[in-house]
Image (cartoon, rainbow, N blue to C red):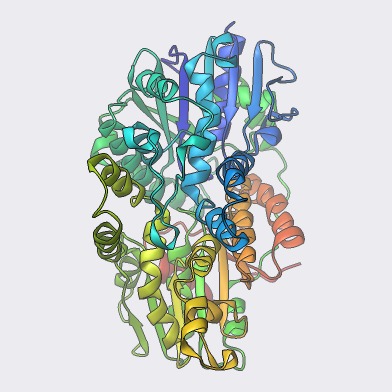
Length: 596
């Protein structure tokens, strides 16, 4: 790792790209070089303790086995809960219990969690407290541009308490923030100073994570945070040149490297290889940045590799279960960005349609990747229809409505804060829900597959605001037994099936588990998990690196099956550019494995 002399170093990227491994390895390297280093994580799915193999708490503690290195794990959920308490506690004598519940749900979104976490770790950048005692502070997970923009708005520090309808507000009364406006000004200025802060954009050699890195780079550059570097992790190079599958994987990797987005091409680039072992423990972390140690560990690992276990049933088995004794239903794929939920939804829709059923496939994916997958097929089944809900368009309509209703009496700074607040992910989800509701109605007549469903937070937010469900019950005078709202349809496990999509890696697994809990709060169960990009589902692997990676998947898959999922299925890792026809061919050739 070169050019890490700035006192504040940030790692950012999609879940599962390796930012925790790289941030830990960097922190260890700097400590080995004699610097006093603090490693800070604010990742809600943090596995810092697992990676370091050392106890990590919400207080600063030394890391075992590394002199001059300390670590702290700021749990953003705890930070957000404390923030909500500071907001609502003074109001408990004034507002009803229902109003307090509504306010708590309004402040349960991703934005509030991120703001509260940033409020906690800003002290390490300001130098006012523990942060000033270290030569370098390394952050595993950087704040997003939305968070930084919001904190810069002067109105956020005034007595602005205007509430948005349907819970779009993601910040709430800022009097609940511990830090001062002066501290945030100091923090933002230091992040802009190229002598003070470095942003490492971590990606894999695949379109999804490179696209995320590209977006993040632009967002940070707009905020004048231009000291950025690109790290591409997990580059595969075949060890067995006779392994046809390994050769295809290497060719795909090389092709992706040649098509890096233009804005990322301008950044300094460093690459790291895919290794045949999990990066856990100090020695393995040191090997990530030490090529001699890496060669030694790789050499030991690739000797006499065991055959990986076959742990996952295929998508063909999932389709059989979904259509058993049914001619209609709602199927929703959910998961964090980059895990393959759009691909999973597309595959399910086509495979069900090929069984002879009427299927409608729709998506809220702003990039419309569903159509990209459909275009890979020579012919679509005649009984399959495809469209998309445009989140941008729906959000524009919703934003105009809120600004006309709630912004008319605000001054300019109040309007500016309201507009920034409406840029939150919560706003988009609420706006999309109304279009989403129309798709739900079709599920009474045919199979409807939806890529990206509303989260549990969005549904609870709508319900506690009374914007649809309770309002309908209150105003219609109808028998409650006869009312069927979209929210109730999602709670109906006979009609609706949520499919959580993950990768066979620790961070995506933990993120999916958190999403499952979020849905559970809204009374919505998860039907099954799909583990995407599973090497262990590919038979006859010869390359020792790939066989080791397939073996390593086993631990994560077992945790999913034992702790999280009622049913678990898998999609094999496909070394093909056109994934959908490759997956269909995989099943047409009757290659799916039988599980243990």
